[in-house]
Length: 61
Image (cartoon, rainbow, N blue to C red; front, side):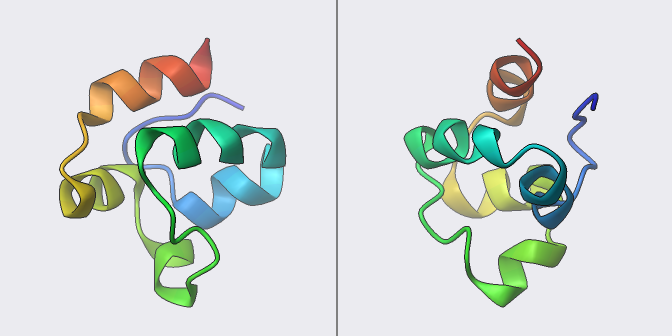
């Protein structure tokens, strides 16, 4: 799965659950929140003050 900044958090966790630890390490500690499931990666990064391009690169590495 190629992850982009428009990919929803719920889709990332459903398709590649092993990527959760990357998101947690980046500072996203609300992955189980129902609202987070429908957020895009970019939206979640904006809320947490995280560089979305850095997270995208780590998730696709």
